[in-house]
Each structure stands twice: as C-alpha cells, then as structure tokens.
Length: 68
Image: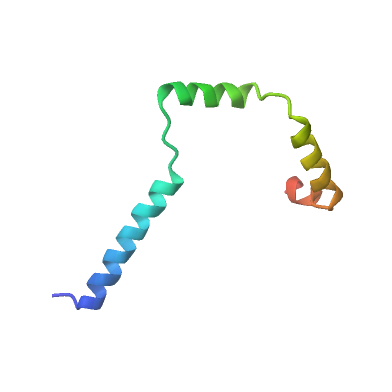
C-alpha cells in the first residue's frame, strides 16, 4: 500500500496534466478549422494598428527575437 502523501502527489500530478492538456489543446469545429486553415494560407493584410505595433516593436530593438 502506498503512503498517503505519494497518493496525493500522484493525484495532483494527474490533475495538473489534465488541466495542461485542456489549455494546450485547441478544439475547433470543422467550419472553424477550415476558416483557420484558409487564413493561414491567405492571411489578411495587416491593419494600421498592427503595422504601428510592429514599427514600435522593431524600434525597441527586438528584431533579433524574430530572427531566431
């Protein structure tokens, strides 16, 4: 028979794995999946707000982070 603390640690570990799995998994309907894939293949033009954010990002010298 396992000690109680071993049982509790294993229980907590199993629950943590389940929670992680729920947050790491993206579940989409067929329609959502098709839309997602279409947007990956044909991304929309960036908005002005997105362009401004990228200019601000590069101005801070973070370009090397994107080149990795």
